[in-house]
Figure 1 (cartoon, helix red, strand yellow):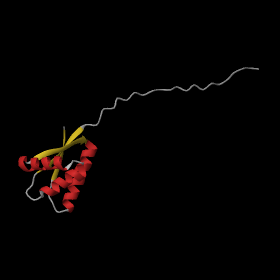
Figure 2 (figure 1 turned 30 degrees about the vertical axis):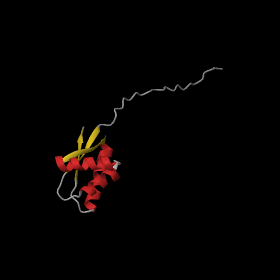
Figure 3 (figure 1 turned 180 degrees about the vertical axis):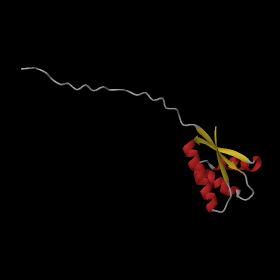
Figure 4 (figure 1 turned 120 degrees about the vertical axis):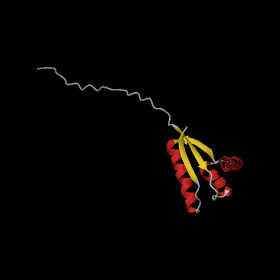
Length: 103
């Protein structure tokens, strides 16, 4: 009688993945002559969680300089918040434009 046994060998492999942090993107508000400053302030507070004081400073910068970076976020979040702001603006009849650029 033979004393033969079948043995299964399991090989464990470890894959090392070097994940890079998501690239940051600037969310930029562009000035126009129609969108009220109060709406811009409210959008900065509601969508980007700025406090009133910061939102007011950013709104003034948009008005005086023609544009301002209102947030720096990972691309997907920047895009989402930019679209959300644009949709709210259009719903209220305002032409506020939001641009997303790599940092």
